[in-house]
Every structure is written in C-alpha cells, then in structure tokens.
Image (cartoon, rainbow, N blue to C red; front, top):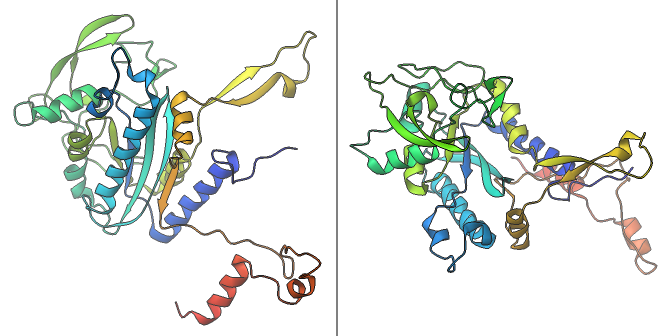
Length: 346
C-alpha cells in the first residue's frame, strides 16, 4: 500500500487533519457563527487594468492569483482586526478552485454569539433598493442571483432529478426564522410588501432572455462586504448545532477530482487497474502554488502532539553521541507538554 502522509498539502490525510482541527475549535469555542464563501471576480479593475493589449483574464493567471490573495487577506483583516461583526475568537479558511477560479471557504467564531434578532443586520437575502443604493443593487444583480433554473432552465448545472440542488427558488417570508436543521430561513419579502423586483437579461442555453427576478432567487450576502469587494460573497449564519460537522467537513473537502479509465490492448478485468482517482489542477491553482500562497490559514494554531508509548519515541544518534542520546533523549512534544502541565497553573 502506498499512502500520502498529512504533510502533503491537499492529500486525504491532510484534509482530514484540518477537519479534526476545526472540530477542536468547536469543542473549545462552540459552533461557528458565520460561514462565508468568497469567490474571485475576473471583472475586478485591478485585473483588467493590468492586462496587456489583446490579452484576456484567462491569459493572466498570475494577476488573478495575486489579486485574489490580496483581497482574501483584506476580508480576513476586516473581520478579525476591524471587527465588522464584533471581536473574533478564532477563524480559518481554505482555498479551492472551481472552473479555474479560486474561492475561499471561511469560518468565523465570534466572542459575542449572533442573536436571532441580529441576523437581519448582518445578512440579507433581498434585492436592495435601487434608488437608495444603486451600487449595491448593481453588485447584487450581477453576482448574487442564483440560476435561472427549474422551469426557466431545466438544463442548469444545479438541477438534479428535476429539482434545484440548492433549493431555489426559496420561499417568500416576512421575517427571518431560526431553529432550522441547517441555516436560518432568511427574510425574503414579497414585491409590494417591502420587497423589490427587477428584470435581468440572463443566458438560458444559447440565448439571452429577459427574466423577472424577485427575492426568491437572491443568495444571502452581507451588504458591506458586497459593496467593498463587488464579488460573489455568500454569508450564512450557523445557528444549528447539527450543521457544524457538515460545515467543517465541507470547508476541508479537498480539491476537485476526476475518474478516468486506463485502457489496455487486452480486456480489463481488474477494476483497480481500470479506474484510477486523479487530481485535476487548473493553471490558476498551479500559479497559486508556484507563488507560495497559503491554501489554509487559521488562528489560533492547533499544535499536534507526537503520541508514543513510554520510552518509545524515535531518537537520532551517531557513534559519537550514542550514550548521551540514550541517557537524556530529546523531549518530544508530548513529553514537554506533560512536564509543562506539572508546573504551569493554567
């Protein structure tokens, strides 16, 4: 058997280790408060303004990687240093790639838990007023509208067995409702009852169609983050304990994979040889790794102790220091922890 150790970034053991670390935060600080998905937007001026004549964004993965890294650092600093949601206890994020573009899954633990009455102040699932805030309205209609799917476009990628896998269109409700198994049911008011409606030209198949959009199709967002970054930023409140393990596993589920078949001249009977699991690495992910950008970050750090039996730790020696290493072997992390535990009152 050939296995990959957890030191290989993106390997199954590496992702499982990070998932266990996330559950360590849950055991220490309770459920996370916010689950944020931040997706790169190739229409950013910082990317388009640096393209050479005749170039498109697909030709400059270095610009996409550098710009998204800067904006990801900015959004983390807004949350943990500027305290836009309040003081943070801990946070973590993981970067993934879909269709060649990077996106980050971010988990935030706050010192003051978000109360049900405060959800509407942080998360909105409605179209903003185009007269009061035209910039936010333009950002939301461009980046935060799901679909079209269901009866409008039955061939949409989100459709599974004739239904939308993301559960759109959502129900229109007057007030935000908590206590659900997953995320809260956010306020989505009817047109004429506080909600707004608009018409958007959206691509359905190979043609452009004008479709009427109301609050049923809006992906939950935070108005401040959407105005600052003008991208797809999905913000969800983690109000249910039952969704904790799912979220921690989803954040660290790993990169996309493809299943392919290796065909030989003779008929294949061995299924292990016939099907191999393969990693798909896009050009943008390759550039991200070449530039040395971090794929995972978190705070505070989780230190893993090297567990071993008594006098069963590994030591390294040569003929010159054999006796010294045997008499006083170097302390491992777990031995140092036991010694510190005896003297540290904390």
